Image (tube, rainbow, N blue to C red; front, side, top):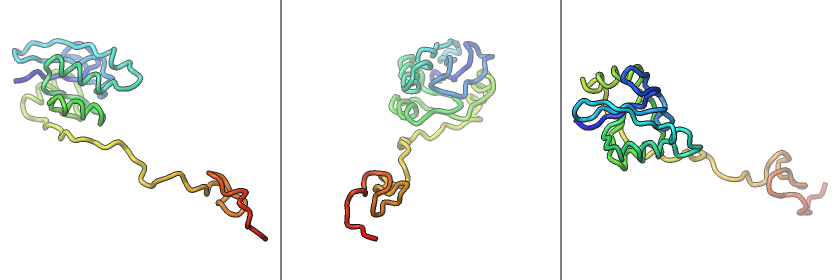
Length: 152
């Protein structure tokens, strides 16, 4: 069995699973021999951005091969996938209960996939047709006014 980390609100097996992967206070790690230790994640959790990526790097350095958490964001998921770390999401309750359920086969690995960054469904700047509709004398946006040629 490989090292398994659980995002946690505390440092013990009795702690609650933290639903946030990157901003979890700790990761409770169970090693191959059944030993348990906590990795402090507060430095990564306090980052203004990139917390999930940093947490993934810290777990990879610690030799973790599986992660149980509430929710893992797309950038963190990509980092975990690149490090070869399996992910199970939707985990809740006590850390000890989550680990027991996983070890008994009651949780399935989440499919790791590259999730594209959110893109707007429709494109562009709006072509200068803001508040005024872009008619003769313009209207919002990027111009339209001052072209002349509009007679009433």
